Image (tube, rainbow, N blue to C red; front, side):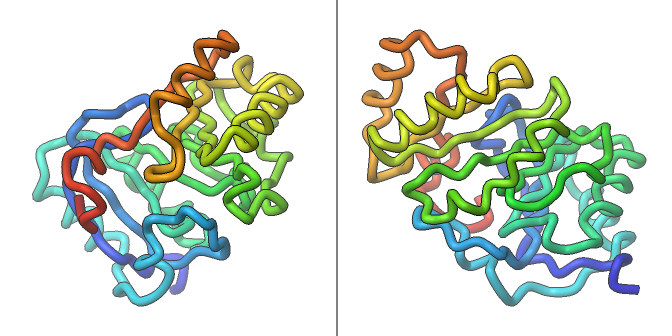
Length: 215
């Protein structure tokens, strides 16, 4: 029974603020709970609480919105076993589905139709030891790797990882500055100065709506 329902913090409609599909109207399904405690986390309100939803009820809720794009996020969505079934149901329903995951949990069972946007935790996160490096061998070319960078030290570490694991040959790599800790222009200048094969990104939704939950 547990696999047929999930604890959800919120389901909301907004613009995708990150990754390759940035700017598209998207339905977000934010699952409750996360085993990590990153220093720069901006969704701590999803660590606990939420409400139980059955898969059929979730699919019915999505019909209120006129978009094919759905992102399953958290918290850490893969911390709930039912997430895998949800991802497959969404794909079966014809949605273009992406999964935002911390990179700390095994992604091997994620439906192959899903675009996985996987973090590699940088040192400033406080959770760098949680990186599950075996996941790198399970990524598809359509997936994306995200590194959130708070300092020059984070950046230098990220460049080392980029080159050591040849990340850009696996899929799109995203470098993103931590809001309030690293000026976006600095990160952009570093990327250009080193001629890195990565995609710079900022969190669009924060520029539009600050940190308002549900946006």
